Image (cartoon, rainbow, N blue to C red):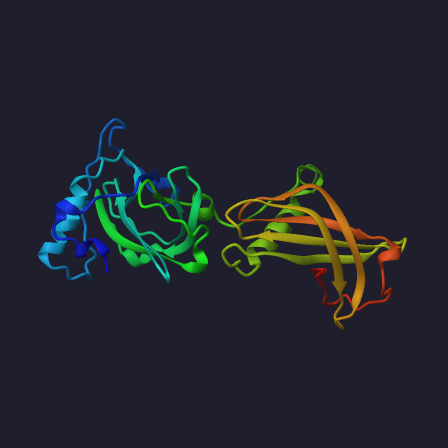
Length: 299
C-alpha cells in the first residue's frame, strides 16, 4: 500500500512533503486548555483495523519521531511521500491532532499544493474512514487523487503539501447582495434562508440555477427571481447570461440575454437575483406557471 515499504530500511525513507495546520475549531467543536506557548509532541496512532508487521510499524514510528511539534488546538497534515501512476496520485501523510481529546472528522476537501502553493489536485475525502484520532497523536493514511481530481499532471517530487480547504467546511448558506440586504424585510430574508436550507445538497463544484418566483407585471413584462447555487470552493463570476423560461408544458415563455455588472456568487453560497424580461422577449403571454424552470441558453 505504501511505496516506501519497498525501501531497504527506515533510514532510507525521506519525508518529501511539507506540513499544513489549521485550528481545530475549523473542523471540530472544542477548546484546549494548554498554555499557548506549549508545544505538543504527537505519538504514533495506527488505525485499529490495520495489522502491520512490526518492521513496517517501525518505519511509521521513525517518520513520526521526526515530525515537528504542534501548537495546542491544531489539526495538521504532514506530507510524507507522493507517488503517481496511470490511475492518479497517491499521497502518504500523517493526520495529526494536538488536542488532549480524540476527534472524529467527516467529509472535507483536501488540496494538493506545490512549493508555490499552486493547486495540483483537489478532492473531497470522508475522513471518518480514519476512525477516531486519539488526543496528541498522528495517524498515517494514504489519500488517493484519481485522475479526474488532478489539475496539473506535472507533479513535484518534493516541496509539496497537503492542506485542508477550509471554505469547504462551511455550511452552504444564503448570500444577499448589499442592496437586497438593505431593502428586504427580515421576514423575506427568513423565507429565502428556508428555501436554501430545503434544497438538495449540491455536488462538489456544482453550479446551477433555480427559479423561485415568476410573475407577469402590469405592463406585460415577466419578472423572474432566480437562485444562483454555487457548490464550488471558490467564488464564481457571472458577466453575461442568456436565459430562457420554460412553463409547465415545457414551452418557452421568454428568452433573452442579460449583462451583469460584477456579479459574484461566493463559495458555497446561494444568491438570488431578479431578471425582468421586456415585452419583446416574451414569447408566450398566457403560460402555465404552476410549474416552471429557468435555464441558460446553450450556444
